[in-house]
Length: 264
Image 1 (cartoon, rainbow, N blue to C red):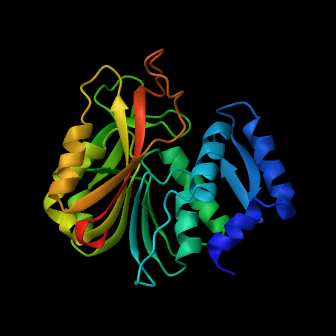
Image 2: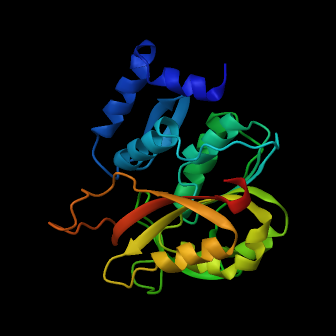
């Protein structure tokens, strides 16, 4: 059975127990670490709401679904969180070569354990931020999926960062960037190397009360030879004329799928 068929079964009447367990976790208080069962094995989470959202986005909506002629595609996963994206990629392509980057050191440890629970031992897990160069940066831990790089030292920790250009010297089949507002700076720093990337998934974050840089991001992607497709995750109400909502300092989040213009 193909993995995608197995995923569909997860949401069929034949597997109500798994759905009930997901609903149980969803109703728990936020920012409370816990453990559940996922694909028949243990899985740790740090925030019930974030886990539910990621589960639905990755395994129900399959926002990271892609095809490749390469049976062992090279994947760079920026912002791996507790590991659901990595698990998805490994189920889709068991021989894939994945480097997973998670800047929050606490979440990175949960990521490592969750991969071991799933029997995944061939993924490079790096407790580092993706950035324009190798350095150390201030990082504000949110306790769930909203941790981000910040300029102020107040209420932040120092985390190591790796320069993304060094990772793009070889062909990369899939680059995922869910790095909470740092995506434009990171992509600008490695634009000459994007010629080595086949597909990109970037989550764009509009920082409230700052100039929106979506046009800059889309121009960069177009100039780098990509055609993009934009969708909005269900994070906000969708009624900005009536009320502008914010979440973790962002007033808009978009999913942007990028494919080579000559492969659309």
